[in-house]
Image (cartoon, rainbow, N blue to C red; front, side, top):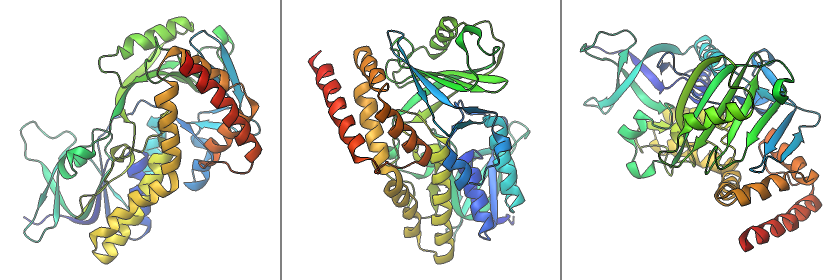
Length: 398
């Protein structure tokens, strides 16, 4: 039986997969975007201004704009970090992801709704992607399409990666859970629709953090932890109770794993490449993933396009190389921060204390907004180093 032929099949229609499909289609490739319907990842939904610019995202997709963040220590001490002249955009993943998928379709990608089942090979080596269409009868045979390239952007538990990449490349992950609620009236129990709250409290997460992020009419209340068996739902219930948001109507609940570091390998050396959460590109310490997922999706599209033109599978390795050159140092620094500062409530208390410093706040927001380490103020870096060293010595001593 003759199967439909594509240049590339992108598995997963989140920000990374939709971006990869859109970019490849714009480059003239024949692309299929295979995505499961109805899946929304638990996510605070924060997007920096650079994302809006780099990926041509209209402001109309923002459901809220945060102009400050508040860091809450185990003692309850809260430190406000105003953004300054800018803002942090907040998106609802349900609307945002669908808009990205529709844009890919407008660029020429063929949307297919179904569940990926595996990759076979024809006699000439061409990949055959098997999938079960949405609504297919139980026990029915899966459908299949041919492709020269497969991009797996199907999440931290990527079925594409399990099938095609070495098991040893699987990164560790944080389990995340959040509840989307109807936002309370402005000012009720201290709630502010323009402020993101981050809780560094061991009772809410022993190794990560909890959050309350406003999304206009809705808000995301969530928590993450890599500790096996940690009761995420109970932690969110506790957070809602302690903030007075337990009476707010729950709209939906979601859970998913979030990777803690990039995979050591993103391709199979033949015709398969991963991106987004499947590649492990979620920032340690902050858990931010949308910008990095879309960046990895774009780099996967660039590497995939080079592969399709040359037929040389070594081109696929350029995706990871490009990402690590651009973001590897930031990920390493954030990983060290998470390892040290999130390890006990005493250290969390000191970490929040550090956030009071104006230099820390300036460099934090500049790095977040522009997605690069800020080098323009060496004196500020020197002051932060000396202050941070004092906190480190104090933490170790205790």
